[in-house]
Length: 151
Image 1 (cartoon, rainbow, N blue to C red):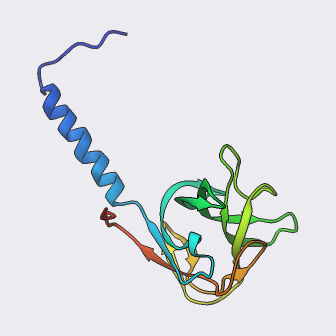
Image 2: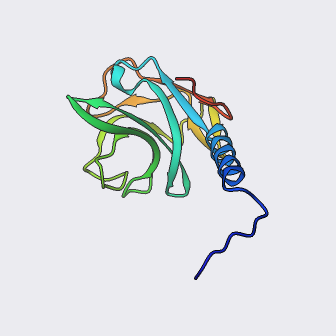
C-alpha cells in the first residue's frame, strides 16, 4: 500500500491534532487515589490502564522491596466464585489474579459500604482488609475522574 500526501493538511497540523487527541485521552482516564494504607508503597494515584474480567484495572509504578514493580487495583474472581477487588503487585508479563501476585489488601464485592464509580464499575472507598503482605491500617480509595495529573 502506498500513502500519498493529499495536501489537505500539513504534517505539522496533523501532528498537532494527533498530540491534542492524545492529551485529551490522557485527561479523561479515570484515576483512583489510595491513601492511609499502613504500607506506604501502595499509597498514591493509580491510572486506569486496561481491564481485567471486563472491569477497569488501575496501575501505579513504584518500588517494592528495592525492585521496580507495578501496583494494581483490579477485580478478581476466586475459584470458589467469590469476587474481590485486590490491591496487589502483578509481576511483569503475568496476568492479574494469579498466585504469582503479591497481595496487600482486598475488598469483597459483597461489602456494602460507599463506593466510587469508575467507568460503570465500583472500586470500594472503604471495606478493605489486610491480606498476605499488607500492614494496618487499611487504605481508603477515592475516584479522580477527568483530570490531568500535575507533575
